[in-house]
Length: 269
View 1 (cartoon, one colour):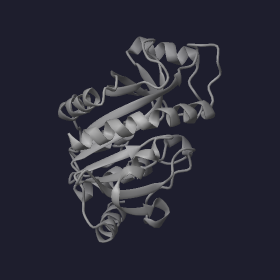
View 2 (view 1 turned 45 degrees about the vertical axis):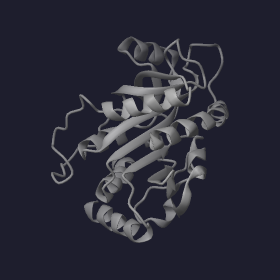
View 3 (view 1 turned 90 degrees about the vertical axis):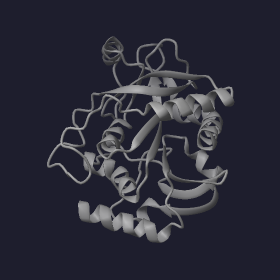
View 4 (view 1 turned 180 degrees about the vertical axis):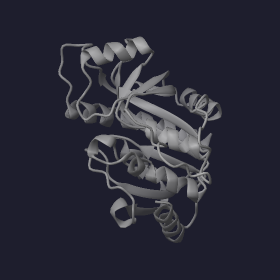
């Protein structure tokens, strides 16, 4: 795997005119941010050896480098998930490559279900912490000592400095930004009402099927992490409505303009 990661990072260095300090992962239905980049270089995931290709709806599967307000940025327009049949090593492969490229800051976005009764669909939530209920850890197995320690600390998994920058950006754009704890399930079935009640009792505010493996891998490599979740729907059992994929993507489309404004202000701040 290390050889493929090194080969992939070398390929990207040749293709990109610059290596940004910041990378952003755009989740379900949130790919619109990439459209505002200038001087763009776009590479389909399928063109990068070893890079897993997105199959989930709302994930374009493109790596885009560009500039915003004179600052350089690398954008992943879509990710892969455990429920797609990918291994944990596949899921964190892009993060490993980004780390090899020298990315210092990683901003993750996702669509989620709101567990907290104070959240409404369309709300943006700054992730404070997470609970891993995916049943596995991406660092399981032999440790790569060059990448990070055998037992990485996760006390400050989400960078305090990046969270303050994101809150400052939200204030500047007059965007109401909630804060909360994200719990990850493996999927692809949505959670049962009983599972949501359990998660709420454990202290979770949001539920989803991504992000946590990437956060763990990034922390292992010493990359600063920030995550913003868009509440797509009320979690199971909170209303009498059934959960649907179409509902998630529709809500993401409505919220995407606010997320674009927030990330732009974050980058320019």
